[in-house]
Image 1 (cartoon, rainbow, N blue to C red):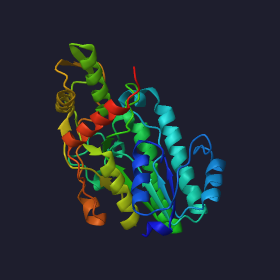
Image 2 (spheres, rainbow, N blue to C red):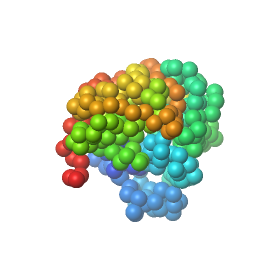
Image 3 (cartoon, helix red, strand yellow):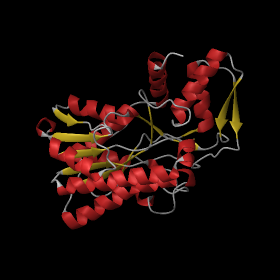
Length: 313
């Protein structure tokens, strides 16, 4: 794919992951990248999507827009997380098909996998059980992008691909303690505890679950590589292939922030999925993706960004 001749709509292009995808596209010579804003183009509104496509006449859609959050946000908003994500995906893809878009890149979530998926997660296990309960509505809503894309490929010859990035982190992430994910929440909690001289930080669960994390710039590169080089109907993981427990992660973040207090685990709060570690070999084979940023280096960059850009208290 030659980006200089393509018109690309990146839904969610103003967000955490999307901003890096837009930068990747522009670095590759794409001169016409369109980023719809929710105030002007509410992607839950079919008419707004049709206006967007009429205005921009895109060749490629990269669908990143989503309503997302950590365990607490998923528990509080299961209905909203299901409906908003499902209706956006259904309509953004259907209108793309009707508008003659040549390629649709659907970006799902690792939350689509069953709760008890064998480690490392491989794409063939995607349908072997129900997702972890706290984020199942979100995961299933995003999983419908895969079903829709495969159905449209079979009936209409529509070129839709589906990517499954693991947990993302990095600069520009959401550091809100109620709605953010684990790494930004840990960074903020440890940094603020250090500044207050607090003796302890309270964290959710018991620290035993494992997670895998993909640095956001690596994820953006993987998405753009897939858009360039992959045209298949099967889902593909985007991951680094490295597993760490939440307890070890908390110790790593505390050490890099310089916080020496105690970690207190609130076991009345849910752990989420027991283990996550993802096999990324298919992405390497199909379109040459391989994560380049180590977890410690990525966390250091994220801490540095947060210290520089956080709102003054």
